[in-house]
Image (cartoon, each protein chain N blue to C red):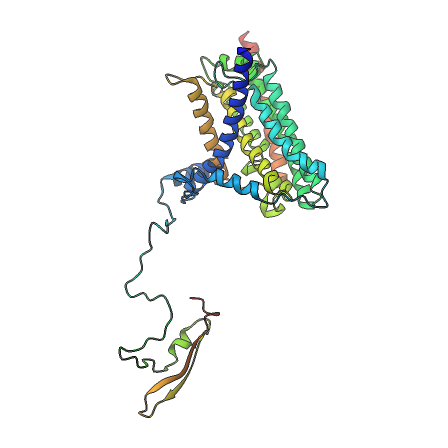
Length: 92
Length: 317
């Protein structure tokens, strides 16, 4: 009986706690300045390929949605022959 | 002629006030539950979400009102009406202040007990007519729970009747001029409150509609406004029990300075919040615990309360 009353009182005290809800359209969440939401294969300012096909992204991706095939151009620089992101599988 | 118009005004005033309080309670309950769970609750529709019940009502009215083909149709239709009708009938005897009351019955308290017993038919018939095992289990539970808690609900208020010497609620409020009955009848009040929660099937005792075991209990098969009727009946029931506790134990409309109607509604409001707090904090007991609690603890306690009150009254003579 005492424990019931105590739990009643403790729930009542929650009235004076901070709300956990973030009122989304009014209060925007903090987004770090370097945040880039969409997955893209970035290019350098001249429009050339930046990716060196190191496969690190494909290994890091938890659902294996990135697939690529590395090749080399005539100067010996590695670049992906194809670079596919399976958006139907992507959990981001 | 004037008196007929006056009493009609009181009847419709009480009806409209009670229905809108029941609707407002939906908002209040969701808001308060949220507040006690560190959330905000419905705050989008209208200012502070106050139009939420209106939106809910519109939604319920426009929903498909489906009667399952296997249901017992006439009983299925009439069951939700019974609960709202019986609870609204009970409001007839409540004195809101010294002159606003629909009818001044000498057997007011008995009338209230009779009407709350009638409410059992609604849930039992709803569970039966749905022709669904979960509904039937819910209906059975509701019937057994309400019947067994009614026994000491009636006994717990007898102490008040003894002290006031009347079943008339107006006389009972008048008898509380000096001291509210919540002090001499403390145990009576606690027992009546617990029985009231069980009668309205509110959360610590909501086994008839225990959603984790029975889908939604007796109203599993109901949809649209028929479901809305059960909903309305439940909230009207809470309002009724709170109003009855105020009338029987907290001096009804009596209070200093401010108008009597304010005091009545203020006390009722506090009790309504207590009902919601109980829902926010207490878990549901097992069914056998509920029954054991009712018959082995509350019933002897209410009989003891009756005995002690009677003994004191006789000693005082």
